Amino acid sequence: MQALIRNRFLLYNLIRRDISSRFVGSYAGLFWGLVHPAILLVVYSTVFVFILKVRLGPGVKQNFAEFLFCGLWAWIAFQEGILHSVNVVVGNPNLVKRMMFPVEVLIPASVLSALFLQLLGFSLFFVYLLAFGKVPVTGVYRLLLVCVPLILQILLTMGLGWILAALNVFIRDTAQMVAALLTVWFFLTPIIYSVDVVPEGVRFLLDVNPWTHLVGMYRDVVFEGRIGLGWGTIYVCVLGVVVFIGGNHVFQKLKPEFADAV
Image (cartoon, rainbow, N blue to C red; front, side, top):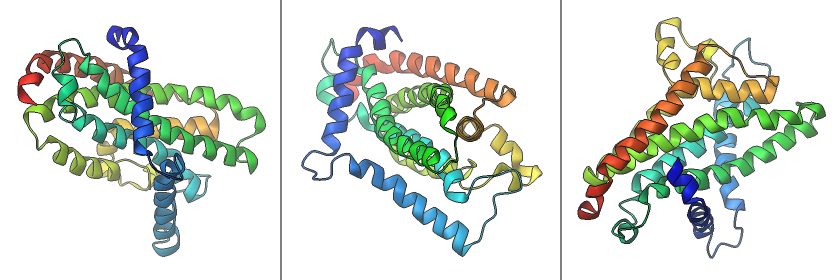
């Protein structure tokens, strides 16, 4: 954490460079950052509502698109942050081989740049909820409450990003394995379905999944204006801090070997 604070201006410049590099030469610019989640939203809504006629369960008050997007935008930010982080060390050998360059800053830069683009989509989603009366005007304070699961998501993503980026330096199959595992992880997270419809016998898989509780926190904040203080919230808080600290520790331990391996 001290390294991030000490190199905050470098971190800011890396984030800005990463965001601008994605859209260099593009006419639509940041608009393309909203297209991916919008397409997924339309496709999932069409398939699950109109073709499969999936029902979310008695405990869900929102329509499928609202229910879906409230978890989908956060997952996309997490997924993009992880996938970019895995390759960021091996993809920047010139920076890694510089003796004084703080390589650990590359991972937070990847995570936060991915998050920035998805926050644009979430902002539009919240405006939609306000405009159509799904959230009262007095519910603007919920944007502040969103910071709680958002910070936990950042801690979890950075911690995993550090671990996976370090492993990918020595085991180059890591990136491919992570991409496959993220697909499995997505379907084990109640984003396109409600926890209520999951059989009791396999619900423990969702209980140990931190993203089950993160998505639940986002939905509670946005739709209900509250944060539950159950064991799931405590679990994610503890896990987020442990993964963040542990991930940074692993990265720092392996960092001296990076220059020879990339």
